[in-house]
Picture 1 (cartoon, one colour):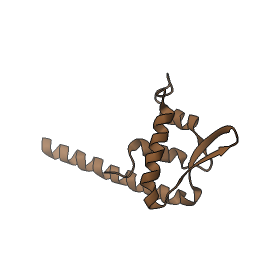
Picture 2: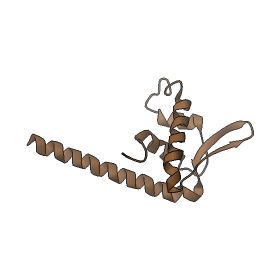
Picture 3: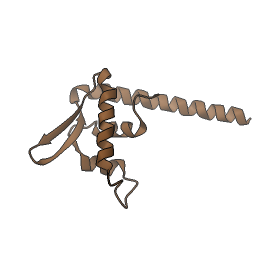
Picture 4: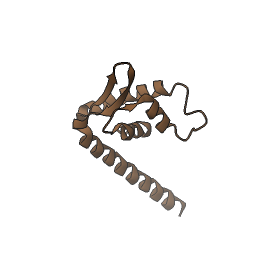
Length: 114
């Protein structure tokens, strides 16, 4: 089992930013391939749920996700800047692990068909 799902990895990559990323921007970037409707109607609920799971998964690694708001303006999410390097390292490790797994699956499939 991986620490973060693919969708959570995508969210982490987006909020690994120098400035808070508003929910509207998160939704737009996560569902960019769905240009007609901009993603599911309840995308914000899905994203908030994933952020909750991510907080739980990342807490043991000392990585915090911040939700910042300014008055009435739409708030945004970001990885705590003090933990950005740890998040980058974690995402790199997850990517390397996924690449190794894909190569292993391809090898098994090629040797099974030979």
